[in-house]
Image 1 (cartoon, one colour):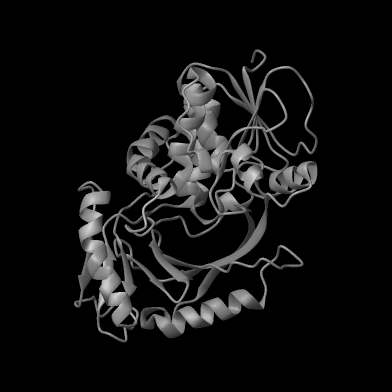
Image 2 (cartoon, rainbow, N blue to C red; image 1 turned 60 degrees about the vertical axis):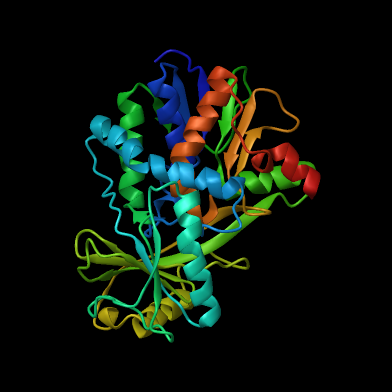
Amino acid sequence: MATPDITIYGAGIFGLSIGFEILKRGFKVKIVDISKPGFGASGGLLGALAPHTPDNWNEKKEFQLSSLLMQQKFWNEVYAISGVDVEYSKNGRIIPLNDDRAVKLSLGRTESAKKLWKGFASWETINKIDKNWYVPSPTGLYSYDTMSAQLNPRKACKSLELAVKKLGATIEENINNRVDKNGLEIWATGHQGLNTLSKEFNKLIGDGVKGQAALLTLDRRNHPQLFTDGIHIIPQQNNLVAIGSTSETIWTHEQTDTRLDQIIQKAKQLCPALINSEIKERWSGIRPRVKGRSPLLGPHPSKENIFIANGGFKIGIGLAPKIAEVTANFILNQQDMIPKRFTPAHVLSLI
C-alpha cells in the first residue's frame, strides 16, 4: 500500500469508524494501535444505544440523536463489505418509575419526544409489562422509549476492522510509540490519550473510568432493554443477556473484581428472570471520559495537522457514525459541523 493520506492512532470504535468513513470517500488510511482492534473499552459487552432523555435539550443530545438515527444504515454498509453481522436490533427500553416525580417527568417526555425526536421514535408511560421480563416499579408505571437499540460491540469492532481492510487500509498492532512525520493524524487513543493531553496542558482534560460488566445465560432476544437503579440489562443474541456496568473513578487494576459480583447479585435481585442464569463471561475496561462528559472532537489546540476524536465514555458506539461523518467532513471538505462544546480549544478554556 502507498503512503497513507491519513494516519489514525487508535483502533477502537471511533478510530475504526472514522477510518471507514474516510476510506469510503477514496482516501488512503493507516490505523495504528497500542494493542489490537477493539481490545480496549470499545470491545465491551453491553452495546446499549440508548438516547438521552427528550428534555433539557442541547447540542450534545441533538448530536447523539442524529447518530442514533444513522445506526442501521451505517452498520448495514459495514456489513455489506465485511460480511460480519453486528446483531443490531431496536427493541426499545423500559425504566421503572419509582415515585410521583418520575411519573410526571415521564408524562412530560411523551410530548417533548414528539417534537425533539421528530417522529422517529416515541416515549410512553405504560402500566402493562411482560411478566417474564421486567423489573419491579413502586408506582406500577414504567417509561418505554422506542428509540433505544443495541448491538454486539465486539462484532461491531470486528466488522469495522474487516471492512476497513477490504477498503484498502492497513492496521498496525502493538505499536507503543507515535512516529513524528509529515501528514495528517487523527488521535482516537482512549483514556491514554486523555492522560497525554492532560499532562501536555497541565490540566485535567479527562481521565479513565473503569467499567465492569457480565454476560448471563438467558434467552430474551427481541425483548426491550431494562434499566433500573443504575444497571443496564440488555438482551442479546445467542441466549445471552448483558448486564452492567460500574463507573469507577478510583481503581487500582483493570481486572474484574468484587464490584462486578455486586452488580450481578443486584441485577438478579431486581430482575426475577435472571435468578437462575449462569455467568458466561466477566469483563472490565477503562472508558475515556472527558471533563464535562461531552466527547472531545476537533483540531489539537497547539499542534498542526492533528485532529482529536476521543471521550466516548458510555455512549461511544452510539456516537460513532456521527463522529465519523463530522470528522471526515471537517478533514476532507473543510466543513465544520462540530459542536463548539466538543472542541479541545473550548474544553481547555473552561478548565
